[in-house]
Image 1 (cartoon, rainbow, N blue to C red):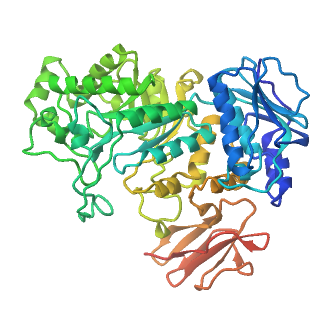
Image 2: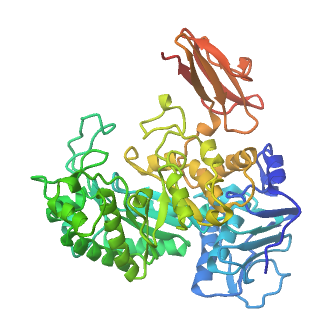
Image 3: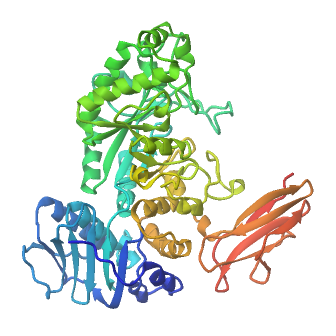
Length: 617
């Protein structure tokens, strides 16, 4: 069955719904994230209640499990669950939700809602699952509540045909700089699945800690999981907390998480860093190094370190043995081998590494890194797997079958695509969630920025410089969560949301970008995140004040707010702004004696915090 083009566009429907007051009437509007490909809204609605039956055309464990996700939500929020029955040729007419295999492409679905029933058509389990995720978002937002809610469970009549833009829609999480327990990893995966994100890039090894149990090398977790202390503040502060810090995942825990993710159609891509960012491993097994230091210890501050894997046989034996256990744990065909930020200092001073360069006729240490990566790729390919690495693996020549994760802007991704290598775009700072998302003057420490929600939403990951043939090698996008300054799950969620919603939409949606449309849907989506207890950043409702240098005695001020339909009112004398204060319309100039204080007003009401910014020479 081909996806049909429908007559009604999504933006017109959703923009009209932005100003709808709360209540049951909200169920009559469609606010789905990520935005579906084609939507037609019809008159009427379907009411879901205890008499509703779920009919499965295929009642194998996969589809029973998918139906169970609906009942999991209803049991908490509605206080009842729906009976699930197998009926291979169930006819419409009975009040129910029908799951049918219509032979659609992988991950595609067709969702039709009428007053008498709901039909979800698919071709694979992933399509059925994503159809259900959309159905959940068509229900009142209270369906995501963890407590019973007294609402009418109404679904608007509509016809939605949907399929993803990219096959790779990823989120990354670094658990080395700070460690997160199994429960949070599962919660992270749940939130990904809600947004139709299907790749979890799990960064498991670093200079600051080794987090994966490898039975052949027990010291990696007995010793390598620990650092004796952690820097406070930035890597430059020189102040430490004096507290040992560690954590790792047992192989049993990893298998459990892999199963959990697979049940939600999320593939976990493990990252084992090489040849750089290897200090935690070298601290356990110094023979893996170039032997230039007297002692090695797991890093206690952030940054890049010269201690990298030496290019000798012991290193490759170690890495091959590690990868063998990784392959047993992770069924993903794709594995990430890092390849980034590998200083060449040790290799330049290492007799063995210089001997390898001479033996194989390599030009320099950059070609030595390429030789290292290509050797590991041959081994990994021999096991039926493929590698992906950060775009530094392009240095000295790209391994023949490698995929590239482009983080250093777009240049690496463009170069790889032009060489007909598949690329995942994750450029910093556009897709780096460790950068500030609001004014740094009023936010906790972060890596840099700011990188605002709108910046992430507006980014198009397919560079125009590529030909249509080359553009086909851009296979997806990924948001990166590096955790130097995210010591807790709450901080991760604050930094990731709502910006991850924008990345998810770019990865899934084929429709033309429309900022006003997105913000309307996102504001309603906050209610779903509230129900799930996600502590997202609420800068969406606050003015963003930006100063632009002009002369030593004045600055030009611009302001913006993400919330749709909001006006910004401001003062310059230090008083609290109100609806009666000056309304921002055009950029203006301030001098050193003035302080900008601003607030967003909508329908006569303040919707966020008062923000202020002070002139600094």
